Picture 1 (tube, rainbow, N blue to C red):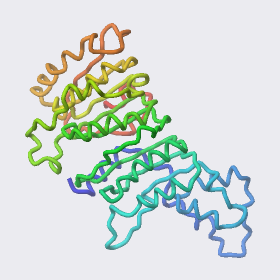
Picture 2 (cartoon, rainbow, N blue to C red; picture 1 turned 90 degrees about the vertical axis):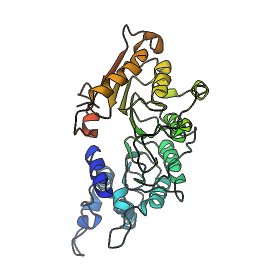
Picture 3 (cartoon, rainbow, N blue to C red; picture 1 turned 45 degrees about the vertical axis):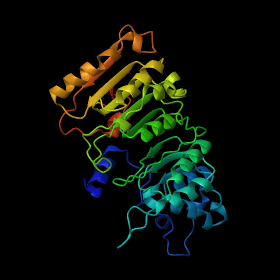
Picture 4 (cartoon, rainbow, N blue to C red; picture 1 turned 180 degrees about the vertical axis):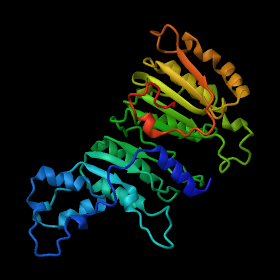
Length: 340
């Protein structure tokens, strides 16, 4: 898939930013000079409302308007969309340069962060530590809404170290895409989950047909599979053990480490009510194979939640052409928000 098309699909699935680049600081002060500055005469609450609707660069610039505006940006819950920090123009690489600027913004604003929309950054071996620092800052200063996409699209660089001391307690629903055939990514997933102790709905998408990582995506090697000793030694994961009540596992194939991950969650999630397993395609043969493989997990003895008369484990084939939609997933009026 071409980078542009991939980005278009991703943006379709995610909620719109609450700040528009069309809302510019210059539009608010275009009187041509000499006119009465009525905006500055507004109460602090209204001025902070104005600042919160500006792109982050314009919001920070309000400090320089006059003494009246000084400090308002830092006193306003931050709304950050990293797309507004990118540099456009001929010959400019779309993958750069926002990571360093985002780091400076997160470090300079005291919080809280009302909305962080971080989709436009490109991580490689030169800046992948920035992601862990972002999570630390977002946790320390409080983030209410976080949309975070960790790229690259085609390169192999990934963040593999997550500090166990970093926590983001405001997140209730978490969606993570994982290559389960890469043991390092499975370990990172388990560490990553510890950063979100209050997650109640966990959406996992397997990405095991990654042709840019595997020489042969259909060939499973012994080194791909984590052994039983590893799974037995996995330490406590607070959200799994005390919060998670629903799990959706998308693109499930029954490949290396996928069943073992589900077993781990079932054995620890005392509040778990429902597990939905979505296959990569609608093929009836695959549905039958996966159903047989997961049949033992439908037993009460596999579930930590002993209050259930009958565990709810559903296996479904994905309808052809279906694209998961964040707008559906975030609509709490839908009984199964991840499934349309």
